[in-house]
Each structure stands twice: as structure tokens, then as C-alpha cells.
Length: 326
Image (tube, rainbow, N blue to C red):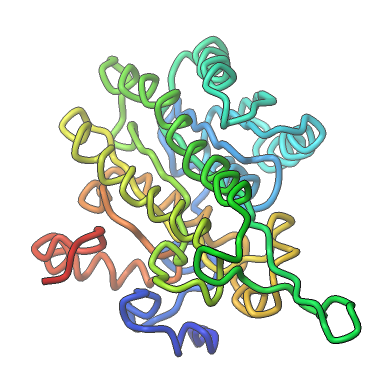
């Protein structure tokens, strides 16, 4: 029996899109189940933010699917070493390399792109997984102590200006700069003789919070930075789809990771999905027949069989894009 959506999803406004399909997907099974060796060879994927959490699991999913090469990157070598070792256990035929890189620094990302070209000679997919957790407000009780749980900063006056721009830098700036660094390699591979139907994929991690108009659950910095990621994906599609580039923004699901373990209780109740979910979606989107979903926001909790069955409706209505409702 398919899982029921968590209470917060059932109560969410329709325009959050969480219940657009009848079935709720919580793990990488059914249409998102990874089929071994389902990718062409050679096939090289770069995954930013892959030292732990969602990014690391996405990299493992591509190894399960038979990627011949995987480039990992994060700020800590020890994390990358651990992920690389786990990939070797999953698929000994996958060549894994990693690069310690601060993805908010353009010079370091140029170095990453150079390593990808030197080590693999091609790039078929770029998974740009970046997010910086915001600071939370801790209220003081009557005797001067702190409350038991932090909360989201209300509006724009409770958060610190420095933290606001720190989150935008860590989330949107890194997504923008990573896209700039890796897009030329994808275009080069597409123009070569060994391009596949699966070549030219860019998947950027967004979030359902990009659709939140209030700061009840997360601060404005978090929702705004992910909303900007959605628009970046639309620009990538409109600018480069005629060359074969396919760009997708994904809500990865509600997943507890080391990066959000300090979130308030109100948010932690949302983290009920399995960490396999976004990796299953990324591999599913990589398939060549998914090009019609380029330039769109996709929620990992949607039932992809139903999504595919409603293709004509989605394309005709130009759905899952950021638009003014008139």
C-alpha cells in the first residue's frame, strides 16, 4: 500500500504542489527504483555537495545505475574519502575522483572543472546540490533562559542581515557559480561524437520552501534562495535547451540530514522521507525521454508514473514554472 503523506503535507495549501499526484512517494521504489547498469557507457556525473547527506546518496545512486565516472566535491576531504569508498563497494567499475572545493568561490570551481576534464575527458550530468542552513531565533523565557526549541525568524526584521546574505551566498551563489563552471563541459560533451540521449542533464536541488510566501516554517533567506534556484533552472532551459541541455529543479523530499539536524521541531516533523528518494529521482530524470520536463520544478514526492501519464496536460499548461497568476 502506498505511503500516506505526512500531516503537514495534507494540510499544506494546494499551491505548494505537494499533493499534485494522488500517490505520495517517500522512497526510491516503484518508478524511482534504481536499475543496475541502466546508464550508457561512458557516463560521467559530477555531484556538488556530495560529502554527506543528500549529495552523497545521489552519488551512490548513480553508481548503482552504472555511471562509469563520478566526481565528488565538498569542503572536507575526510567526508569525500568516506563517500568514495562506499561507491567503490557499490560498483567497483565506477571510477571515482574527488576535489575539495568551496563552491562559493569561482576560482576553486574552475579548478574543479579542470579536474573533471583531466580525469574523465567528458561530463554527461551535473547534479548541483547546495544549501546553507539559516540561523534560528531562540526566545528567552521569563527567567532569562532560552526556550526549548528554536524557531524561524519572522518577516525581515528578526533575522540578522549578515546571516541573510550568508544563506543566499551558500545556496544561490553556489548554485549559480557551479552551473557556470560545469555547463561548458556538458556542452562540449553534447557536441562530441559520444553524446547520449542521457547527456546534458543539469539537476539543481531546490526545495518546497521556495513556494512558501510566509516565514512560519523557514526564514526568508531560505525560501528566497531556493526560489532563485527555480528561476536559474528556467534560464538554463530557455538559453541552452536547443543545444540539448536539460535543466531541472527538484524538491528532494523531507529528509533528515546532518545539515538540518539543528532545525526547529516544527521543521523536523517534516523530515520523514527516505534519503534514497532524491537519488532515485535524479537517475529517473536523467533518462533521455524526460526532456519534456526540462525547465521545471519537480517534487520528489510525486508519483512519477502519474506525472508521465499527465505529460500532455503539463506541457500544454506550461506547468511547474514560476509564473504570475492572472
